[in-house]
Image (cartoon, rainbow, N blue to C red; front, side, top):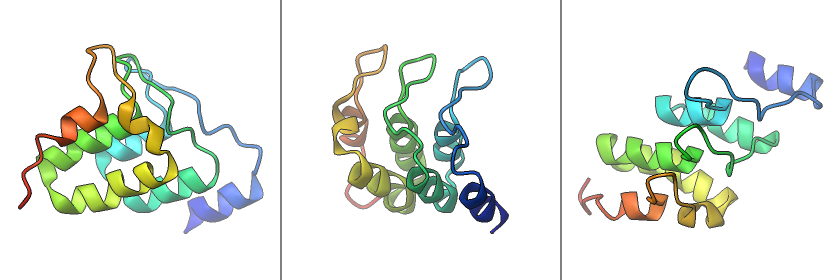
Length: 111
């Protein structure tokens, strides 16, 4: 994987910048697109799972929203690694006052 070797060579690379009108970090973008391999790679190389975007959403908010839409696989691939890496992110409210924990309560058991 080219990204993996790039990150290995550039250990001082800033991974917590934001981009675009939504002010999303690479970790936010990966969670909204559902790429679990890059999610794990970014976390391993120091991406901040507590960083918020313009709406106050953390990457875990976006992962939880994706899990609601796409089910258990998205939950296992995105939410589980983020929760394991940063359990306190489950209780961070966005600007609407909603936490990832609140979002995940809407997930159906068979989803």
